[in-house]
Image (cartoon, rainbow, N blue to C red; front, side, top):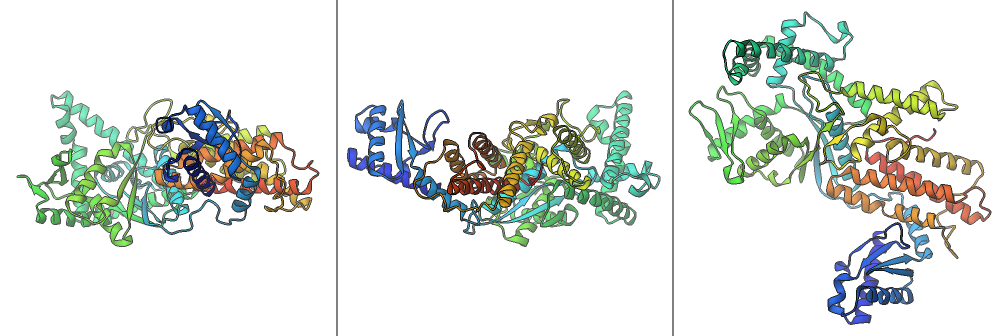
Amino acid sequence: MIELEQIIKENISQAFQNLYNLTVGPGSILLQPTRKEFAGTFTFVTFPYTKSIGKTPDIIGVELGKYLKENTTEVYNYNVVKGFLNLEIDDAIWAGVFRQLATDADFGYAKDKKSKVVVEYSSPNTNKPLHLGHLRNNFLGYSVAEILKANGHEVVKVNLVNDRGIHICKSMLAYQMYGQGETPQSSGIKGDHLAGKYYVLFDKAYKSEIDELVSSGMEAEAAKKEAPLMRHAQEMLQKWEQGDEEVMQLWQQMNGWVYEGFAETYQNIGVDFDKFYYESQTYLLGKSSVDEGLAKGVFFKKENGSVWVDLTAEGLDEKLVLRADGTSVYITQDLGTAELKYQDFGYDSSIYVIADEQNYHMQVLQAILKKLEKPYAHGIYHLSYGMVDLPSGKMKSREGTVVDADELVAEMVETARKQTDELGKIEGFTAAEAQQLYHVLAMGALKYFLLKVDPKKRMLFNPEESISFIGNTGPFIQYTHARIAAILRKAAELNIPTDATAYAEAVTFHETEREVITQLAAFPNVVQEAANLYAPSVVGQYAYELAKAYNRFYTEVSIFQETNTAVLSFRVTLSKMVAQTIKRSMLLLGIEVPERM
């Protein structure tokens, strides 16, 4: 498609030269897809050239269209609508385009190697299980990594686990106080859920203490700092940084439970990582960065011993990088992690998949790294995404009002089971095969719904809408693939060959065949655009449009009743190519497609 588009631009450039003695380079010529209601593939807008040529947009369009039709092999017809020149491409050209893409084993994927990219995503806290917001993060990070790979980049997927800090100590302290030796085994509670249980217990008890202090006359802000539980949690954090044996043992025990729980969730939702980083291993390197900043005069100490950086010149403000008691803050360990990732991989760019609530934090991180003159500072990119809301409102983990990831996946699987059983799409399946299909459909619905929206947009999650087999949903695209897989099985039984060259001579395509080929040919552009924008939504929309185009073809054109063997072979080959491209598109989103339904 890229090559054809370039040829059309060169033809238009030549037309300008020959008709009007006007030099318009191919690089300055813009083509856009023709709107559905008009015949054509490419549309060229003539309005910008009226002044230099001295004719109306319509007349320029007609003259250019006539020239292209009479002097090129690519354009066989044209129409002009108010200065929009719509160009119809000759079917012989489409046959050539289809032969080219159908014989390319790596169709859609870049063959040249580009830069090294680290994609950091997930970044869970070890004081609570993953929730709906984490799912958007995980799916977005995984998909962006896969899209970048397809675009020729060398990609490393990393996960920075927030395994230390005051929030971890809150769960640990609550467990010390209320746990009574409870374990995942004794309670039957998944490890990450068990840690989350005590995080919620801490918050409830902490709020009660604040209320008591406020009722006794203390200011609310002071009460938050002076509440006994918070003071104990701060003491525990200091003991942790000092390596206190009892605190470290409890920390290792509870984190171990959480890691087992995370591993189970990651496997269930189909995401993976090449390397894990742990803040407990990076915060000391961050403290070294603080020492470096002090030595360079980038940081300064206040009277209480805390260390700060002045970013007012960057349009930000003063930022704490080390507390007065010597304990680190988030930015400290982020400085250390950035340094460690660069030492490990020497990346060209480092993408942080982090919610837009941390926009300011990421601006601060990059500004500090630039002040420290780190070679990787300019390669940092914050892939900021909007939060996921529910009909009931915003999620709050401290209050236990989050949508738990494990529970949501289980509910989606159950919904998929009900929908699939009602539609009778599992005839002949064993119980294990049916259960696998339910999971594939559930994850397809969930991932597609969360990824089809532009990452920057805040979104409302609607489980019922996401699982539908009708409309812009994962299951609709998955079902289209399964339908084509059934067609290909039947074609194999009838010994119908798939031959991309069979339909080369005296070509006359049906309108829907032409539309499908056009959609297929756009796939490499889509992969490139999605990589440039870090936007899986571009791939999602493409997969939906391709599935729609194929279903229209399937409805309007006979495949197996066709008597011309060359045409029959072409239509089976076209179907096979659509199935392959749907599968590749969906895999870029981390979504499997079923062979049977």
